Length: 395
Image (cartoon, rainbow, N blue to C red; front, side, top):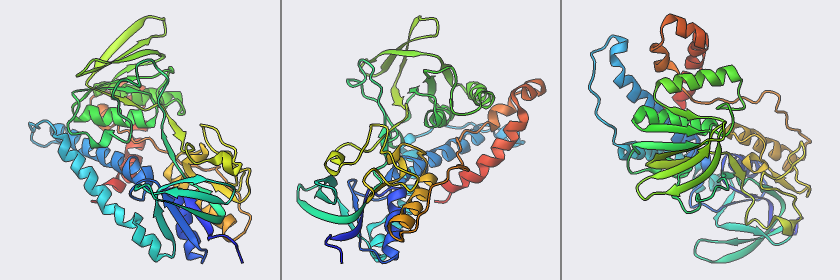
């Protein structure tokens, strides 16, 4: 018999944590799930996959409305969007999915759910502090760290004193910014650049490297950039940030270009999309003897930390920061930690998709331009994106 309160305890209720919790509880393990936010579901449901794909779908429909004549339909005069209505629709979509990630569901599976911040006291025991300030100590034979990640903020003079947006705020704006500056050129930055440009914002993207979507093939990244530029997005590549200023009603970003010349741009809103940092702060991992860095918690191929009874999965490891990767890793943890069957991770075929849509820009190309920029890729990516976009359509 175990001398601990629980067989297994999970910190974090995103995709990885919920997968482990459901699997462990249904297997008969005495399971505790701890979540610091007031609701379950993690970033994917509240600040990532679901709201972003809902917004992208809305922007796609709006773009279709503006381009009705290209489909042989009567030309339509489309009014400006009311972002408050878009925001409300995003919240409705989240609310429709929320019951699948509710405490009641996981309690019915046999787990216990507790809301509060967890901090390790030693290798098996944590202190949980609720939002009301009440604390209690619990122990578990096995722990799982599924604490996700948060947006990284660059160390640029003036940023800390300047209001800016991340993925946590961008989907809950009261109104559409007339101009939007985006720092970063990764998937989040580029998806939001196209969506907000289609909705009516003047968008400028500031990227430190010479290529947007730097993990993708250069020719495909160049095609996406060219097509977004046709939709009105302005790109500043190969830059070095100098400072950021709050001008009251606008934000100013000062940067140096590849020639060392200093340039500044202004916008009503500033979105920082420069990658993610692992959720390791405040966990007291040093008290449990767990190795970690700001980039993530190192694990072996069975997702064990240097403390073999403590596992880490999902964004907290800093590896593949995808919801489907988190779910997969949660399954690996359950196999090892609950069933005690040695299962190793295999990332040979890890899919990924950036949800940009080249359809309407490609319609504006002549035949020579279309061939030059890779029309065959446009057809392929559009059909691929159509299948995945359907995930955000169910409301």
